[in-house]
Structures are given as C-alpha cells and as structure tokens.
Image (cartoon, rainbow, N blue to C red):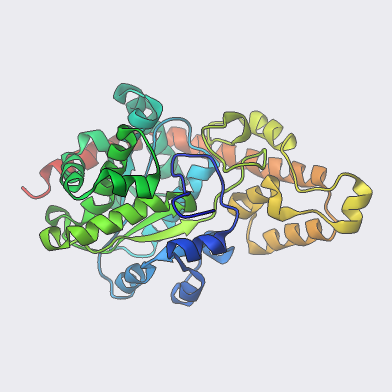
Length: 376
C-alpha cells in the first residue's frame, strides 16, 4: 500500500495497519488507553487502533470542557455492520462527558455525487438511519443531526475552503476523481469544522471517528483548519480510526457496494442467518486438519462478527479465539453461534428502531430549528 492509496469511496480493506500508521503519520491509540476510565469494546479489543490528537479530547474530558464528536452517514442504503462501528464510537465518546455534543451529518451531497441519489430519496432513508443510531444508544438531548444540503454553514464553508485548494492538491489526496466527489470532500470538511463556528460555541476539540480508509478526509480537514486558523480560530480536528470489518466473502471490507456479502440492520433475522451460514471462514479444508492446525481467525469474517460486534464481552471473544486456533471449535458450530447472536440482536434492534421513528423525525426537526436560530 503506497501513499495516496487509501480510497474513502472504495471497497478495499487495509492489509497492514502498522504500515498505515507509519506512512500516513497516524499515532497508535494504545499509549492513551490508561487515560480512559472505562474502555469501549473497540478500544479493549484493538479495533480502534489509531488516532490524531485524541489527547485534546481527553484533556477536555478531564477538564470538564466542551468538545464535539462529529461523524455522519451517506444515506445510500440500509445501515450495515461497518456503519454501525462508527455509530458505536460516536455513542461511546458522546457518553464520556456531559459537555460532549454529537454532530451527525446526513451526507446527501455525497450520496448525490457518488451514487446519483436524489435529495428526495435520501431524505426518506435518513429518517431510518437516525432511528437506527438512536436505537443503538445516541443521546438525542446532546445531538445535532442535519442534512448537508440544507445546512447553509456547511455549504458556505465548503465554498470558502475551495479558495485554498488546487486540483493538484485534491489529486494528491484522493487520486483522479469526478469533480463532484472533490466537491463532496470539501462539503465533508465543512461538516467536520462547522462545530467550531462562533455561533455554535466557538473553537473546541472535535473528534471524528472513522474507518481507516477515511483518513484522506481527515487530512484534508486538518490542512484546511490550519489554513483558516487566523480567520476562524479553528483547532485541528482530532480523529480515532477503527479497523475495517471483512465482508462475508472475506475479500474486501463490508460495504454497501457488495450487498450479498454484508449484514444490514434491516436484514430479517432468517436472511442474516443464511448469509452467515454460507460465509467464507478461516477454517481448514478438512475436520482433521482443523483439529490438528486450528483455524485462522485473522482472515475469518465470522470471527469478525464476534470481535467487532457480538461477543458478549472480552472473555467470550478470547474463548472463541482460543477454541478456534487450538482446533477445538469447528466452523459449522462457530457459524451457528454467530447466527444466533446476530438474530437476537436484529430482533431487538428492529423493535427499538421502529419505536424510535417518531423520535428521529423530532430530532431532525429540533436540530434544524436549533441550527437556524444559532447566532441570532
């Protein structure tokens, strides 16, 4: 993996996270773990592996000062388990302090540029997405949710930022892309830096939880924060990076671009179970070889289901890993257990999401009113 090869719009996974750290200047999370009072599963399991200026957010938590957690979702399909990883981080970092505000962008401009979806289409999808993250645990009383295309501050910032970038700069970060995707990247930089505007409380630490492949967006936003520091007082945004979950085929990250090999929060429990039972595994060719050599959880998307989402706790995950690598656990049994865990989660999540639909609409309306009145 060479420089410039991270693709925020692609489906490739990262093969070597340590090389990513060194090539792109991302710092490891591990040295900061003692500063957390309680680790999330992502932190304790090494899923959140990298960071940029995370200490700024931890300083704000320790000093009882305000900070923002900022992310979003492209409303181009159902919430899937890869998307849920970012949602889990937003919810966790929002929960660490009463002074934290979560900003959640509905990336309808990107959905239009990348997927050709109309704003009318994505508006319908967005309500379900907001209901999903509320059902997962987002605190609506400290959250601002908005559509990119409807938030004038974001669009204004993207126009301002366009003054400071060149085509060569964008090509160096993203490679050769349609102009619409470059524009969407500038809009996303507007999302990331908007919480620091004076009418929204002024400069503050902003943490952006992202998958490892999204680092180009972080680098662009940090560069723009530095370029516009004198004008806006921007603090360079912080980031925490999570590893990418394998698709059920085991050959790419879990992505909406491969619908047959991903699990979504809208899958019926029976459909999800069938997908898991037919998934690729890190098992051996025969039972005898499996018993002798053990499985290979490092290449197994079924093990990823446990590690990223569904192991009850770290002890459960360690047991699955031990039984797999020692040849005690066979892939069929492992799939059956994973399918049971996923089915149980989906039943509960879908009930909660349905109950949260009116809350999602209310949050969108309340956020729009809050943003419209800010600074008046």
